[in-house]
Length: 345
Image 1: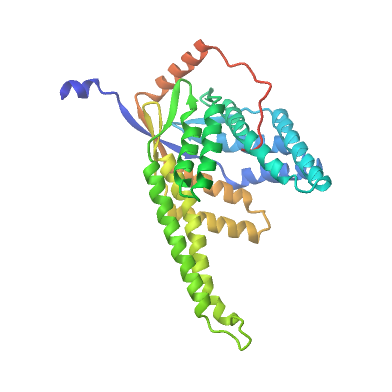
Image 2 (image 1 turned 90 degrees about the vertical axis):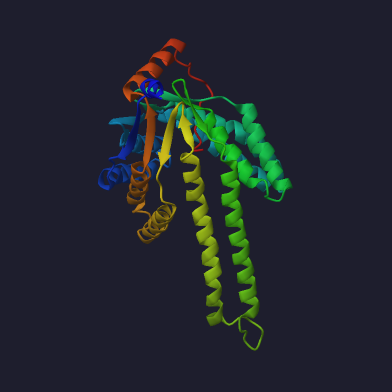
């Protein structure tokens, strides 16, 4: 036992921190918005890089920040491609009604490739302590998971959706790297299935309650539902909205809290009801201010998420990062790809 203790690597909990503030981010956001409007959208890639770079640099782990290095011109190229495709779609449907099905098929064929390219792009231009992340070009697996499990979900009338959702998360996490350290999502598909099953049963119960309520509500002499009584139907509808609002944060916490980076493990202390409250109040604030509260809402959510994340590190983090940098340098820097693309995926 003593020998094991002596040989065991040191374990430390390194907390994430977020130092961004609303006033600084609001200045970046409002200037970016104005320039984007004045330039008819051409400035939007530069706006995206400025905003993302501020948020990344405001996020720190063990006293060191992250960074974002994307070239706005590359993002502009991707958006011009997207706008061109959208224009062809609109023009094509106007000249040849019924072409929508063909477009859906093309999107299904192209979407997995685009998702992989976008993940590669964002990983390549994200760094921590000057060491870049990367994502594998797993096109074949992307088609299997996104298209294959998507079709399986349709065939099973949605029963396979929890597993399909888990496989998609695993695809996007397991092929990400920091140096030679690989990200990995644990086998939590049973937890995915359990979460979605409970939510689905609650939605079905709410729908049944809604149907029964509508059938039993008092009606006017002409057979219409009394508007005053129909207010009671809001309760099950609100309950359904609440369930769907719960699903996103619950699955996100389940996913993030089961990710490892090599031998190191991410610790997620998010409180799902708290995140739901932040979502609802952020939405209300943005709506009431006609969008001017977007910077405040963004900073508020980022601060909560990162201040409740930590990394369980096995060994000295400085030595780990230095080792990864040496290994990446030995492998050689990856050549730029002519097909870099970022469509906001």
